[in-house]
Image (cartoon, rainbow, N blue to C red; front, side, top):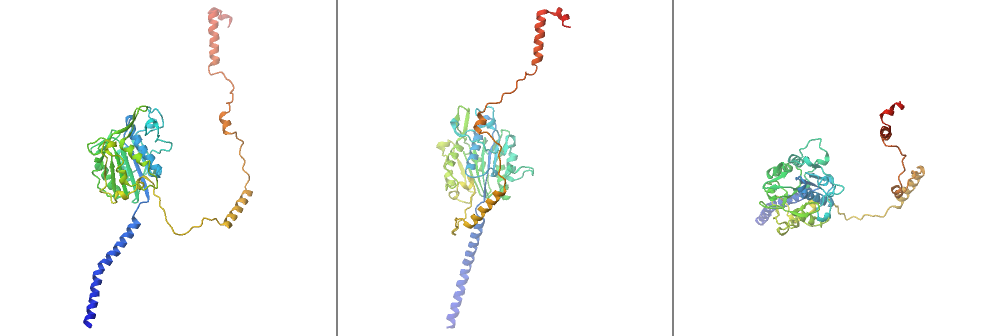
Length: 395
């Protein structure tokens, strides 16, 4: 009997020892899940949109950037979270037949310049140095807030670049270039300094895929308009303006974004399919091996839209106003109105009468030099009639 009891206790101890690792493993998994819950997600979105080309014949690169700018603003990212860099001002170019406009569709159907474009870096401010300083945050203390990328470790950042490039580089204003190594190192600095949660890099240029080949930082997803050895082609020539209005890849990406709304459930995998080679002529590429999430689970609005936190509650909230509170506030408003003097406005004409009323006639005054010219005319007529010999009768 004692042996049986001792055997049962030993068996229970053995089972407990075997289950101990599983219990600790389950506890650690619960802790990891809780920690991931509190650290997951992001709280803000940013966009850095860069056009690196100057000169009128590169009109399409400015239109590319302004079109992306229009889309991210429509989906909810405010100007305070957008850094817009335009290397040239096409809207005010003397060759522009429609000043103060930049069109992205033929027949001048869509003006993407608009009335509320806030350009943060323009003309010769768009340099490789300034671009890298914006990304890494190494900018002078005197730089205004609108020219800063004030992101943190919960920021999702969209970086869009367009211009002329080649195998492993992108030109800035035909005077300098940024290499894929410099860009990769800048992203690594951003990760080390906790300046982003996830990063989406899109580039529309020739041999664009070469620009993301050297990336090595985590949580980066990259898209390009063309593979190494391929050109990225333009789209929509406009005879009235005299140039192409957009590049093919950006045109079809924006056509896709026009169907997106802030509540859309469209994912990044759908974005990869928007411009097949039959439409783009070049072969678009993408890279997702550095990204931790499956692109099918990443919404388009995680980068192109604003972050909207919603708290779901099961409690019932009464929307019926309290009659007692309303009555007291109404009495207080009446007392305030009695104490205040009535406002009086100056008498004004209706706007229609102001616009169409006739201008007041001004008093006529002879123009400057009129009297002097009149005297000169009189003297000339006198000399022609009487000659110099009759001058003695005047003096």
